[in-house]
Length: 212
Figure 1 (cartoon, rainbow, N blue to C red):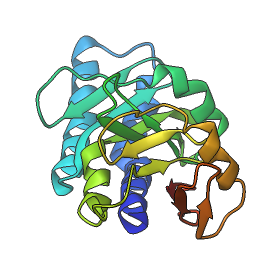
Figure 2 (cartoon, helix red, strand yellow):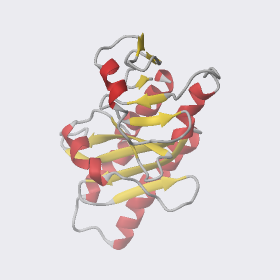
Figure 3 (cartoon, one colour):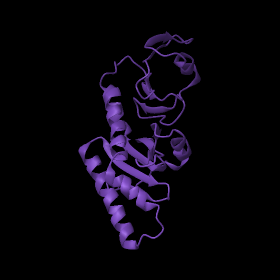
């Protein structure tokens, strides 16, 4: 899981470092663009987004949002693009280029990896990039390894929010309080709860996720 997540995060870095996308986002802040110039700009960004998406099977869609308010998106399934980016926008900008993972649709079936885009010329913030993958892709790494006697399995972030679960339920919710007590410290460990159940908690992954 850790290795695959790092690869997704690297996709956002590749997009940020793409000279064509950087130039297009810089141009998007101009007020004097004609309709045709704006069309060319949109096509240029979407062409590059599609190339990144098609190279990785797990990527379902990508979104770039400029600070000027323009949104550019590409989706593989041709369905209307939906993403809960707005509610995370302020936090993503505050992270100043660090990654933010979040549930990106109301059904909890998509997970987004987003970060702010800084201009390579002057380091000013010019937008946000979001790479969106299926929650089922994350679940596939542990679903076949779970023992029949095991109960629920979760992938949670450092805020104890559920990003993936064995049965596909409870995405976006905070894990119950009885589990939170065993999540305070890092390291792999087994802990027995007051009700007699045994809980396994993995060490922190690179992006501060844990398997519970």
